[in-house]
Structures are given as C-alpha cells and as structure tokens.
Length: 412
Image (cartoon, rainbow, N blue to C red; front, side):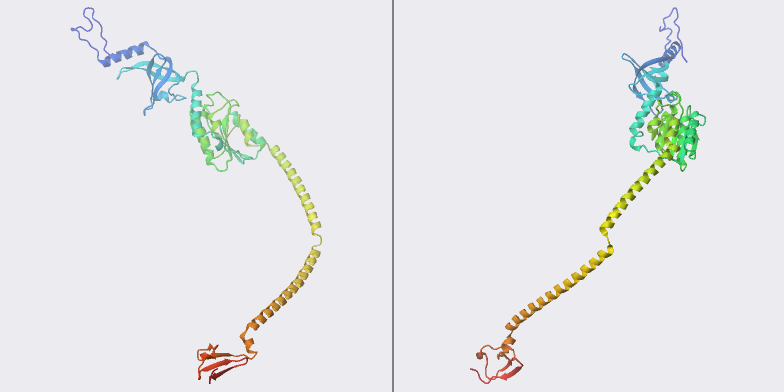
C-alpha cells in the first residue's frame, strides 16, 4: 500500500516531531505509480544490446541510442507472437510502458510489441529462417530430385475451396485424364495453417504409389502466403520421400517452401503443367521416335545386307575351299611321311656308323683275331705280366668262342 505524505503547514516534512519516513519499497511504488499514471504506452526506437533469453522464455535486453539507454523486458506471452527473433544490433521499434521494477528499483520499458525498424517483421523473419535453413543444407542443389516423366499418381496439398485446386485439376484432366489425383485438403492461411500443411505432406507420404507432390495455393499478400514460410512446412517438405513441387502464389512470390522443394512452379497451374506433359505431345514424340527407330532399323539392315554380300563374295564356294584344304592335307601327309622315312634312314645310318666304331674298340673283336684274355682265379684279375703267376695257379682264359680253366705248369 502506497502511503502518501502531506507536508504540514507548520512542521517540516522530516522534522523530529513528525518523523514520517518512506521505506524503499514505498518510494519505488510511489515512483512506479507516478510514471504509470503520467506516461501512457508509447513507441520507442533504439538498438538492441545485451539480448538474452533465460529458461523462463522472457526477453531481457537493453534498448539504446547514441546518448542513452534503458533496460527493457518482453514477457514470453508477447514474445511468442513475434514473427521474427530479436537479436543484438537490430534496430527496432518497441511499443510498451515505462515502469519501475520495485524489487531492484530499476527503470524498465515493458515491451508489448516490437517491429524491426526500416523493415517489416515478416521480411526479417523470412530472412532469418532462410539463412538458418540454408546453413543446415535444406536448400542444397545436390539433394534436389528429378520429377518422374509421366507419374501414375499425383498428390496435391492445398485448400479444396480455392481456385488453385480447380485450375490444377483442369490441367491434369485435359492433359492425362487417366492419371490418379489424390487431394489432401488443408488450411492454407491463418492460425494453424502451417501445421495442417505439414501434416498433409506427411499423410501423403504414408500412402503407397504416389509419384509426385504439389504443395501450394493461389496468390495473396505476404501475410496470406506466410504459412508456406513457416519452419514446420519447410522441414516437412525436406523430409518428404516423394519429389515435391512448390506452387505458391504468383510468379513474383517466393516462399521458404520454394527453396526447400525439389522444384518451384511460378503458379499452381504451372505446377500441373510441370508434372504432367500434354498427351498429344507425348503421342507426337512417340510417333517421331517410332519413325526414327524404323529409319535406324532400315539403315542397319541395309548395312548388314551389304556386309553379308561382301562376305559371300569373299567366301565363294565353301565346298571348293574344303576340297582344296583336303587335297592340301593329303599333300602334307605324303610329304610328312617322306620326311619321316628320310629321317629314319639317316638315323639308322648314323646308328650303324656308331656301332662299327664301338665294335672296332671292343675287346671281343680282338679275340676274333686269335687273342685271349687271362684272369687269375679266384679274384678274377686280368693277368698282364707272367711274373704275377706261380706254378699251380688256376687261371680262366677267355677265347673268341668260349672259356677254359687251366693250371699253370710253368712260366716264361
């Protein structure tokens, strides 16, 4: 309770007789009440410094200019409504009330709303999320997937009440009416739209057989298209196992979904044209390819015929060639036999010559001329000197024909 002190006309405020003193809490409350009653809510511009967010989720920072500064706080409930994240060095416009934090006597600006100075909050939020996701690799070109040439089944995540869906279905029906189209109706703007879009992408990914997804809506203001700039939608597109075409707004509109998707279409109508070609164009292309194939086959057959004719001419009569080869084999066989016989006779002549030489050196040939070989018994040594014999020794005499055992009667 704030206690006010009135000055007595006769006694001073702090005279020893009155002794009416304020406590610190009362003084701070007095200052707080005076400020809040005299200064209405107002806009303040400045630069953020010392920005911090404790576990409570409140924003604490200093708002300053070139000459002065003031402490500021933005409670979590107001902070969650911001489209962007405040950061040090950012020039902002803050709407709030000036008051005193009684416990410490700090003068503070209690901020209820905040806008980037010079740029809209949506633009700052767009750039902040874009830079964040780009650093994580969600926009990398190497992860972009090609679209199937002629998908059997097409999934569409959009509102079932907008003209965009009607235009896409008309294009798909005109081009390939037999293609299957699955529409996941979602809210595309306003509170909760981003969550519905992300859930729609996830739901179609759980269905089997869908070849490509179109995610988008028709044109509108930046606020209308903002659901496609939400992080939850960007991550749902990134996690999609099916190639995604982003088709949001008009050609001049760019969203975060465009950067994450595998392909961007300038409009929903262009997205339908992108995923399904014209049936007439496909048939025309097939006919052209068929004509090219026929021409290639005719050219290949003509070349094969010419090559076959040339080989036939070179080959002539295969029977004649076979007979010539057989005659050549016979001639080679006769020549081989003659050479073998000549070689055999030469070997026999050489063998006879070598045999004659061996016979000339054989001791048996000497015996034929009347000589003999004497062996002393019993050891059988050849006797070359009569001195090696004694009367009575037994000897074996080898003759040209036969052998004789004799006893020595004498020696000379």
